Length: 72
Image 1 (cartoon, rainbow, N blue to C red):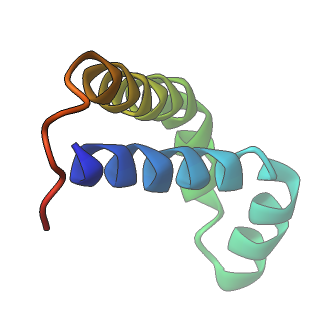
Image 2 (cartoon, rainbow, N blue to C red):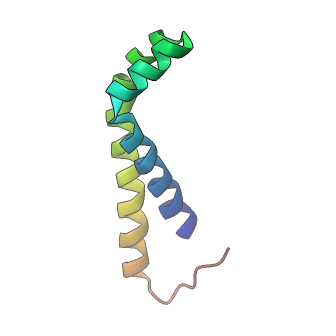
């Protein structure tokens, strides 16, 4: 469960970084890959929903079976 929660946290952080889109648009434009900025909006909602779902699942499953020791 710890791995699932960690993946969810990393995904949520990634989605949070996508929220600062104006900075990315300027940076991508300066690097010559401005076309990539259009795809950030399409990816944001699915990434944040899946990430938060993984975090919620890991927390819920850990509360349901607290006697299971986390390994790894």
